[in-house]
Length: 281
Length: 342
Image (cartoon, rainbow over all chains, first blue to last red; front, side):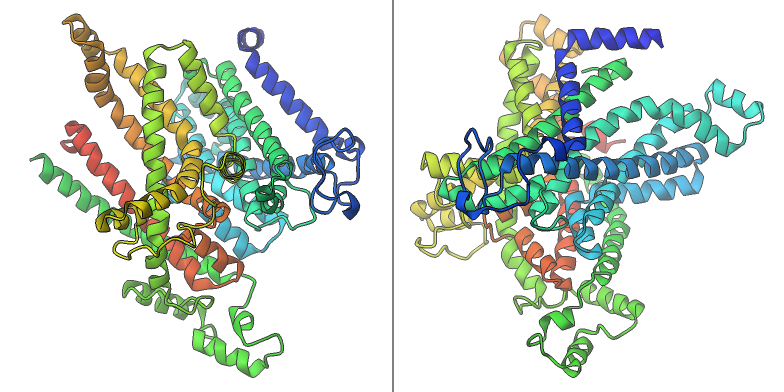
């Protein structure tokens, strides 16, 4: 353990980018949690008298077509966007890890069948699948979460399956079985904890992707509905004003999206360096 | 000999694709049948349409029959090339899709060519001097490229190149509305204008295409350039490169001929994945640039709960994807003859 910490410290010192990404993510999380207390204005209170004002000292990111403060809306949206991404990735991680590790442990016909389904799913343009699912299930936030979880699922199943497959005949697994552990217990108590570190990398990289997907869906008008502050829908509403030169309506939500995804991606790369030194690029 | 092997592989691949395609058809059918909106209510004459009229339309659409029967009818229709009729445009779905597919394909292919044209040199440059300034610049570009969503980068490109600099034309659609109507031969405007020799028209069409294609290219630049760099590094570290260098071949020849040739296989593999991402991103880019392709068509149908076009679109996506994978398979065989002799 202390060796891991030592290694982590070494990676963080030699690669300050990871440390910056971790700090950025903490800031995002804090903004999400404390949103109601940090927002300078009410994010949904409109005031047409100050509509479409450029960024200023009073309104750091300007105001939108209804006079709402964009900076406050960005902060309010942080909570929703992070919550959507985290719950979607959480669902697909838990489901994918369990399904994948049982398939990898058992092997056989079930494993091949699941592998086939996963291959077909992964081959398909996943964003299109998510679009169709949200449209089919209804325009609600929960359905964005479900759709994003489903399109992430194949990656986790395949990953967990492969990781468990290479470990299932390892000595310590044999020892656990010889010690009288049932199959269920071997998978859940011995194999799953063992593959968690490498899955953490996958989770961090996936969170960024999930944010992009959710924002893309609401940009198209699927999922989150208009007055709710959300980065994708803010870009969609601001798109009309870009040809009039009012760039801040699109620019700031776009910047927020970019920074959030950047943090998660860099953190994922850093985690990979810490947890899996062999994969270092 | 090699060609026979490739042909055999293609045949086997096509057969292996059939169950997957069937799965896609059944899946989209079921998905569309759980859609909340009732299209019969949506498309009757008005909000005060009587129950009688709704029932009549349901009967006409076959919505009153049991689901398994609807599915079998749908499968038979798809098999005979009848994808139903779009309720919004009033046209058969297949002719709508045929009319709009060239616009989407032209955009996606141009974006892919543009992305490859940028990613291959960048990846090679980075691999030539790992750890150098160029390498870090390429890495930075790639890291940022995957973080900006296509709908944001598209809008920002419009802001800079259309509004501020005035270099790009009005970013709506494939053709300027005041320009001469394009000839209708293949549906690919660049090819059509080239065939009739209308170079003013060709330039106008190309100018409309640049921004959306660039938007998509930027999004997929990262995986392509990263893979090129990694594959080139692996190839440059191998024995045959050392041999080539030691017998005094020029640096350029070693890089472009021997190393690149061997680095192409992993790049080809990732092109398949990249293409799938692009097909999805197409919908977003087409919406931003009002591009009259299949993505915006399907989106409109989806929001109007019009079943048939969405099913047709998803099926077409799957077909395009299968075809792309076939082409990549063939290129595999050409790039590395060992693959086809397995």
